[in-house]
Image 1 (cartoon, rainbow, N blue to C red):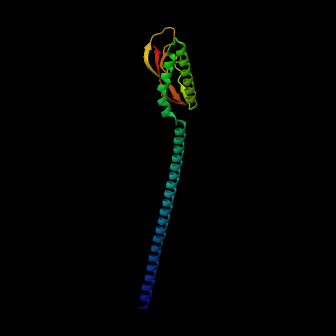
Image 2 (image 1 turned 30 degrees about the vertical axis):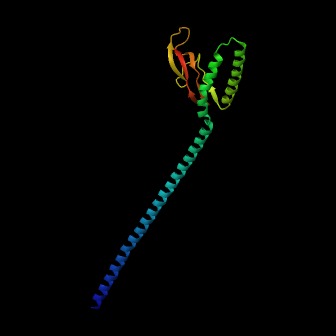
Image 3 (image 1 turned 180 degrees about the vertical axis):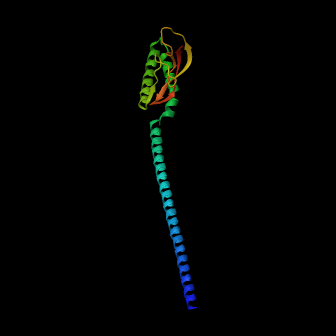
Length: 180
C-alpha cells in the first residue's frame, strides 16, 4: 500500500509540475503580449507626435506666408480706391486749353498728378503695358475687336482704360481693343 501511495504521490507531483509548467508559459505569453502591446502604443504615440510636429511646422509656415502677403499687399484696398482718381487726372490733363489761365491750371493739376503717381509707385503700383503688345488675358480685358491688316492678329490696337497691378497682382486689367 505504501507503494501505491508513493505512486499516487509521484503522479500528483508530476501533475503539479506539468500544471506549473503549463501555467508559466501562459504568464510568459501574457507578459510578451503586454510588452508587444506597450511597444505598439509607444510607436503610435511617437507617430502622433511626429505628425503633430509636422502639422505645427506647416501652420507656422502658412502664418509666415500670410503675414508676408499681408505686408506685401497692405496698400491694395487704398490703391484700388485711388485708381479712379488717377483716371480722372488723366482725363483732365487730356483736355486742350486755349487760355493762359487754363494752361497754368493744367500745369498745377499735372504737378499734383505726378506727385500722386510717384507716391503710389513707391507702394508698388505699376501701369500695365497694353498698346502694341500681344493680348494677354491675365492683364488685358478685350472689349472691342477690329481688323487692321498692318498689325498682327492678337495685338492690342488701343488702350481704352489703363490697367494697373500691385507688384505681381493685377488690381484692374487694361480695357483694350484687339486686332482680329
